[in-house]
Amino acid sequence: MTDAPHIPVMLNEVLAALQPTANEVYVDGTLGAGGYTRGILNADKNCKVIGIDRDQTAHDLASQWGADYAGRLTLVKNSFGNLEEALSEIGVESVDGLVLDLGVSSMQFDEADRGFSFRFDAPLDMRMDRNTGETAADIVNGMAEEELANLIYLYGEERKSRHVASAIIKARAVSKITTTKQLADIIRSVIHVSPRDKIDPSTRTFQALRIAVNDELGELESVLSAAERVLKVGGRLVVVTFHSLEDRIVKNFLNEKARPAPSPSRHLPMALDAPLNRLSFSLITKKPVLPTESEMKINPRARSAKLRSAIKLGDS
Ligand SMILES: C[S@@+](CC[C@H](N)C(=O)[O-])C[C@H]1O[C@@H](n2cnc3c(N)ncnc32)[C@H](O)[C@@H]1O
Image 1 (cartoon, rainbow, N blue to C red):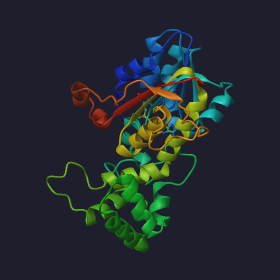
Image 2: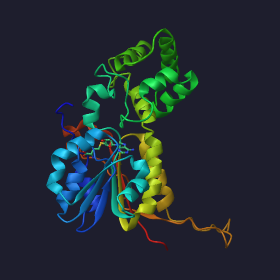
Image 3: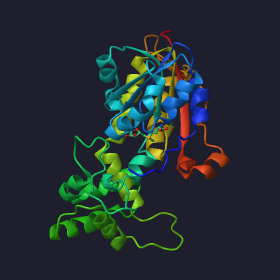
Image 4: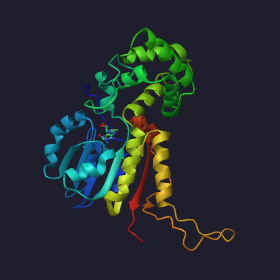
């Protein structure tokens, strides 16, 4: 592991939305380097946090700082997509808040042998939980061309996805693609860098593979649906996203769950027995909260962040 620190993104805004309060219990579904967890535990000396991460590295790191919060911090190694199961294993049914800071941490990105970054030559892995599931190498060596092109297009928003997929298929027919460098070279052979390009041509394909390997969008859908059941009335949901695919899922979820039920139109009167759109959340801010200019200057990772938050409503 390198020493590059992970600077928590929009921590002040997260705390403002979550409002840590004495005797309340919060879930940090993306423990990482513990930036949010520590922020919450420091904001109120009598609240508790359940820190979840599926990456053992986050837990190893927490063993260095967790003792400062003895009795107030519970660590769980699991995926946040299994939120209810993970909580029931520690005897918890409901909580007062859930915060998520999606994606990979700077630590994971900077750990060369994880294979998340084309900056290092490493095995093409990209699993957050290194004990389970397919690696990025399994996908690039095993997936059919069309499926691979669609994956790179959808998750990487790469317009040249078909060229990339075709180059991968040709290269793997010669020899198995096992390293980040091999893959980055294949991508660069079909997407030429122009001086105007701000990002490396591999960025989008690497993002697509990372999302697929870790089922990042499926995990997000599962945790949002679980939040509806696990949050107490008045509990707060705070989600920080880093790209449009994630943000769209959170936005659509909250649009559906927090939008007022449409009033019956006089041209199309609602049948008396039509089911009402049951609302389960009320938005804390109507628009997403964005990082300040000064935060973006200090922490480039914050540039694409968007924070959305909502309060769980009771049955009405
Ligand atoms: C951006 S980092 C979080 C950083 C943290 N907020 C901090 O300030 O230190 C995201 C973390 O969430 C973890 N993670 C991502 N998706 C996950 C999932 N579905 N289940 C559990 N952990 C996940 C990653 O392993 C990573 O450690």
